[in-house]
Length: 106
Image (cartoon, rainbow, N blue to C red; front, side, top):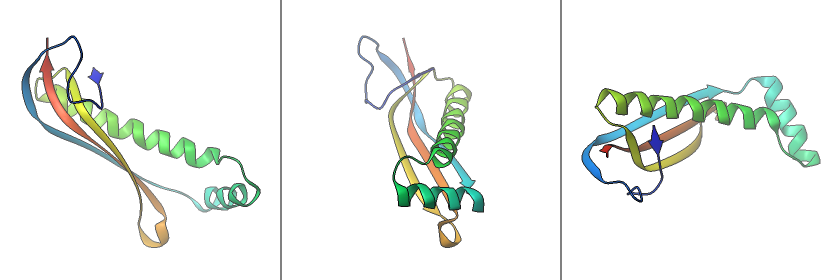
């Protein structure tokens, strides 16, 4: 499925706008990841555990908008926007939200 952050697809014509699609994934970060993430923050560098969790959440959210688009009869999503938020008590969870417009292109 074609996915883009732009409102159009160069070289392709949008035949029909099918509606807004939204995918969300909320994943908890366990205590060990929090500890190791804090150590990485102190000594510098990247936190691989958080990066893997973010990638996992993003993959889930994209799969949801693709499924919604297919159910509407679409074959592409335009105008995609990604948002990341820390939610839950003491920021213990991470939410990834992906939205866009389901379309049918030729």
